[in-house]
Image 1: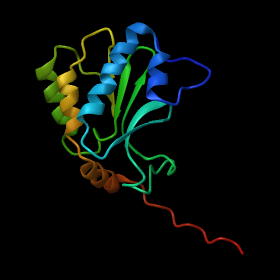
Image 2: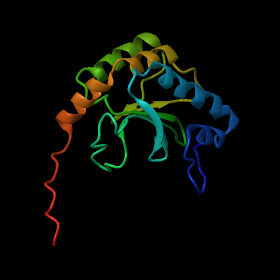
Image 3: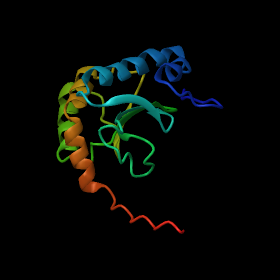
Image 4: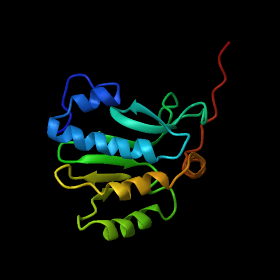
Length: 164
């Protein structure tokens, strides 16, 4: 069951509390893996209705190009209707990450890899490959993510002069 409510919670704890019990523990363990294994410099927050691990504005003042008021996202975790989703923004941006994940996944589990454009779909009814996810979380520093993001970031539009 996915998170269906009239108002999306604004914190990780509130989001987890809104989940059915059977999914809550799996969701919380998934968040904990990223919380413990992401390198220093990422911060936990909430954006786009999901738990978000991002680069704070104090480190990357420009924020996310789609909405500069939001810190630069790196990993988001959400409960969807049929799966738990890990949106890892670096998978298709950082060279070699998809290939590494594909190879590591095959070595770590017999489950089929269900991977979309930056979205790793996990079946909450099956054991999660937590060690593999911990390694995935630890592979990219804030500096590496910013460098990769800046290479693909859309060009900024020149600001229009203000009318007097």
